[in-house]
Amino acid sequence: MFSLTVRRHFMIAHSLPREAFGPAQALHGATFVAEVAFRRRTLNDDAIVLDIGAAGTIIEEVLAGLNYRNLDEHPDFEGKLTTTEALAHYIARSVAEKLKDDDDGAQLAGIDVTLRENPDAWATFSLDLPAVDLPAS
Image (cartoon, rainbow, N blue to C red; front, top):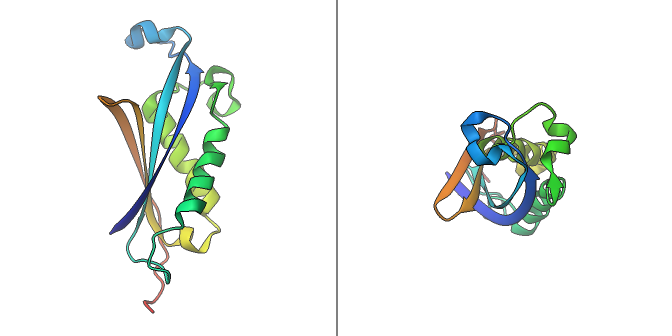
């Protein structure tokens, strides 16, 4: 299995209104480093998983909808907790949606999103995709 990982960062505000989250129940900010790994069983004709520039653009488009936003007011998260794990899931699904009609995107076996809040704490969501196996050239 091959993989390509591209990193970007984004900043959000949110609250986690449950007792389990202690002081994070109140509105607070968080800065995340998003590492998005694209997995593929075979390389494309250019011997790559996915174009790095295209991958970066897609990630930036997804993160633009979150960056500098109060997620408590974001329509996609209405009635939902915006934990690091939940955000990783959201980003993975959003990236996959943007790649679904792309030739290389159709070949992906999965997308892994790791969100790092600091060097000592992170969460990952792995999304397996139904890669279309094309005959080797």
